[in-house]
Image (cartoon, rainbow, N blue to C red):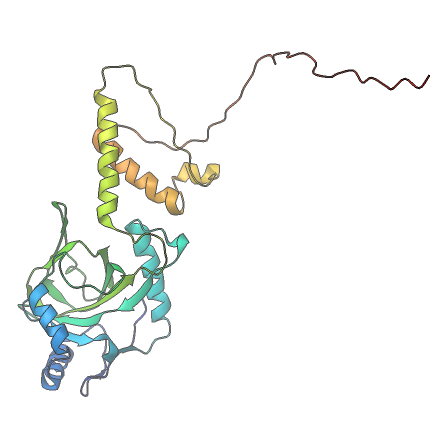
Length: 298
């Protein structure tokens, strides 16, 4: 259950924003931001004009956005952890920093497009966008990477629901025009904060392609091939966890990826506890003891 952030905007005389966002409140925000002028610096605006083709969402800098509810930041931290789990980022080696990017208000006719060439913050590998309760229609979101598209529509129930969208930074995002109402969005940057390799969907795609090639070669091989291949997990799960199909951390990510690719290739993936027993007769190698000679004192 998402808490009410008690959103406060210091631009102009906007102040505290009530949620769900009403149409009069949305129009007041647009009017105040327009009166205050552009919030972006010249360099930021130049980068925006070059990299982002936008149809006019009202944007407010993160420094002018504040949250009066102390429960909001813990909620965002939990959302970030869940998002990292979803997109396959191992947080056990170091949790990423979650930095607010801006506040975006999409009014009727607003749309938005980014590409993998869009300027990004240093160390940024992903984005979390939180859609706050506000009634709108249209605004379908299209994501694509390596010719793999996905479409998401958050408009149904948008008046009473807080929705979360997370994706890698090298994913292309396109928001279709809002046809009616207002969409209030809070994008956050996921910043890599450790010395380990920065998470990347490109690396993930390469690994999945290699796995696909191996499985396909195994399936099409005319030579004798094994009927089963066992992969050892990093952590030994309990029997209850196996029955429920619930793994943790890196094991969960690998199992999910393997399951998806294996299913597409026509293989079955299961979880099991295996026991290895060796039986037989020990081979007698003879005694290697040598007799000790005592000195003769006679």
